[in-house]
Length: 168
Image 1 (spheres, helix red, strand yellow):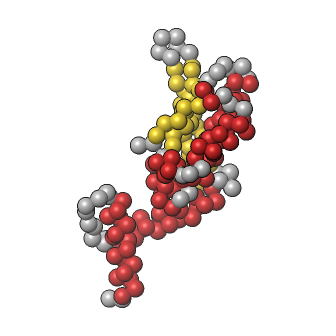
Image 2 (cartoon, one colour; image 1 turned 90 degrees about the horizontal axis):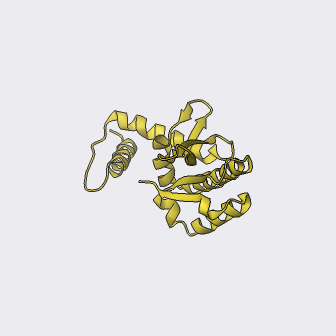
Image 3 (spheres, rainbow, N blue to C red; image 1 turned 120 degrees about the vertical axis):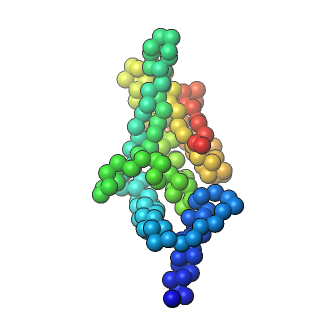
């Protein structure tokens, strides 16, 4: 009944349609409003997550099947939210990609994963490779290559011990 509310609801439905991919439409439903608010809360929280040290990396070991030796690890970012607990990447990375927070998050992940790989090497665990997932917006960033170089230089990790994987 109110013009402002109608426009707000149309906007919410439009963003939901965009999230669903190309060539579709969506009608506004009240639960979309709940999702939009949830997204807004996560988006504003992402802006402070790095500075507040709320991001953490978990590592999945990579094992040589012939020898059984651990040859590396893949880094996975998690968000340790102060009120919601551990938030998985599927819940916040797509939002970070849209709102632009993925660039600083990706830089932090790259630097932290390189630092950890170097720490493992210094502890005598050998030349372990660390794999980092990178999203398309990060690759399109003009500072991406320099960011990788900086992470390697800051940590002293040999570039041959870093694997970059494109996030699907």
